[in-house]
Length: 47
Image (cartoon, rainbow, N blue to C red; front, side, top):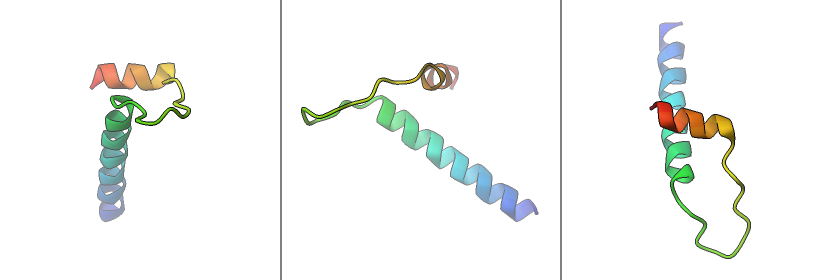
């Protein structure tokens, strides 16, 4: 059970890092870029 928890925590950290990186970057094309949700803004400010 301990190994499973460590794997899930690692995946969570990677997912958060990726979301933070994507939230701080702009779309390079003229295509659609969705607005950032209030929850994501709050999480980025807290970390």
